[in-house]
Length: 263
Image (cartoon, rainbow, N blue to C red; front, side, top):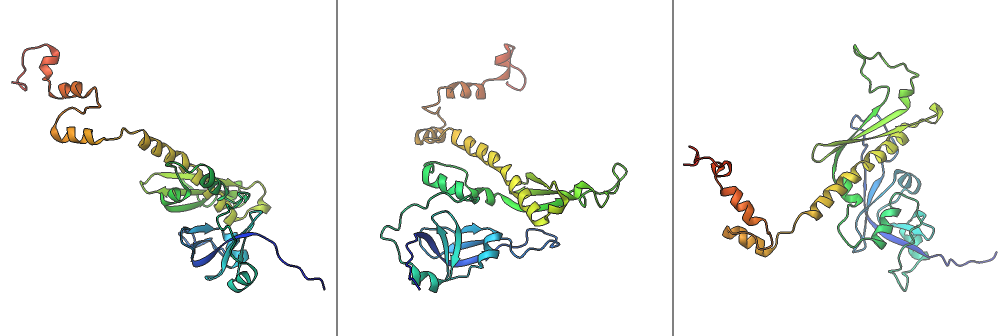
């Protein structure tokens, strides 16, 4: 039969470690074959990255194999023997990976390639703010009391999934997923969508905090020296006024005779 040679160009990282993510349901009542994982590559200069539950289920990656991305953005896995027998390092290993992958990390890769010159909020920073997650079904989450009855078994509320994320400072955000057709309801998918929507609520919060930090006046060495000496800052024209207000007597401002507290 005719013989063919592969001319395909791929991007790949050898897998050093795989940390599978635990069940996000604190009650343990839900179950799935995978909750995604974090892959650590062997190559220097590349950080750990997350892969989806779908990737883990479909490809079943193992340590020592290769995480592979094709030119069209498709992510795959190849055992070491198969990959190393069919591919060799490119003459130019630093050719940028085309950003055509519709996955959740495609925008982040494009930002890293085109707009990564200053401080910004990253997906890793966002995830680091989350300390716990809680899921509520619209039907089972309702507690009947004097104000509301028991939810019927066929209530549309059973198609509603709510994800509550608790952040490091104790603040909470939530996301919602609602399924239109009862036949299509899937608890795992509903939770994933609700989680993604909850995470979207965190972006503007972290963006505001970063902008606040960037807008804060920078303390110069001259300012620090003036503070230590107890003198006005050289670059602060209002320092003398502030110093006056801090030391002036209340009765002086009122125009009265010295009061008992000021004598």
